[in-house]
Image (tube, rainbow, N blue to C red; front, side):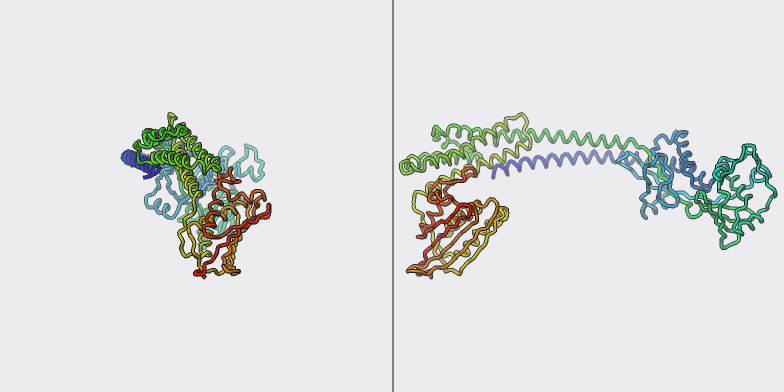
Length: 603
């Protein structure tokens, strides 16, 4: 099993186990806490509902039944007085009252913007069935109780004020004074109102039927604490004993009717509404704080367990193998690897990489000793190619050692370590590939010939460059001629075409086009297949065109170029008895023309 998967599996299984234990114990605690909250909530809800109905609802409805008009100022004063005088309202946070619809018209707390109750059909049915809705508002640590109310009709009673023929200024209510002053009446405080004639109920009815609002009826309304403007309008109903009165000042409308020589009055249109009371419930906030604290404790426990586990696993699976690899790399120049080769290594990736590194060093040393004379011209190139991965591996190992020598290793450090180990593995692979390519350059290619259609082989290679070309903004344009099948080493030709196309794309950093053209040429005694791979890139300087097939010659050292791609490609084409020509001009692009002979049996 790969080290990263083994490491991830152990960490993930441990995290899952800890989380399962966390949720198990936390669910038990939450069930107990919720049971206690439900019991306490049920007890609190009963108490709060009594306060809302017996204190607040009674006072608000009493005011509305008496005045038969919704005065937000009077209701605000009543609620504020209740809050101040009643001990059982100490936990009341806010009281909101509506009339006729869901818009809040009166509120204990000042409102910056209009507020509405969001009551759906289900909530309204619940209020009608249970007489109230009780809900918890977690973000405010409050309990909300919504109850409905209705304003009952009021019978107009004959009072002492109504029976008097005259009134002194002291007997006139403040509301009447406000009405008179609003009409620009300039009355001194000693003014006395005199009633010229007592009119019967019957005469009041006649006046109402004529669309008039009798002064005597207005006085009776004031005596019953119902304040209308004296110029209120009267609309006659379908029956002679029913009228609709509109107060022009306040806009309120009233239904007025007479029954057995007594007048009844009721708010018209809007005579029902809702009252919402918000109670402060401190035990909710306490419960939330307790839950957060327990969650924090469990998170700390999980964190400590993970730190301990990561430290132990890192020390056993990474630090010790890396220390051995570091020792080998540091002793690389001595060349004494025999003792390392015969040691026992674990099955993890780092140990395998260490063993392969030792073997590779020994192979390189032996091969170098045997072929030192023949490989003199390549000495600088191969030393450069080996030293770079070794340095990279060494620096990576040192960096890994630095990371895991910290007193506390974070998950981000672990991720970085895994990435660095991938780099080590990649560099070891590069060393393997370099050594193999180096060996093949010094002996003829052995071909494994099969019947191949060159056009189909080209499509197979180009399919690997779809995403690469798209990212590089390179367009690949194909122009094929029908060709006979050829006897080719498919793998080597695939690699050859891949190397040339890759070089063409890399030669166009700002994008461009690659043209792939195949033709059949039947000139002379041996017919040929022609393959042209042409790009619109930066081109190859003339002084470098003769050197591009030399091993380890590259102009891409900064990009990690090795300089073996074209050398191997040239060797492959030569092994197929073909030839390759390059035509290039700086700034105009490069064209590789490959010629492959066709045997008579292939035609």
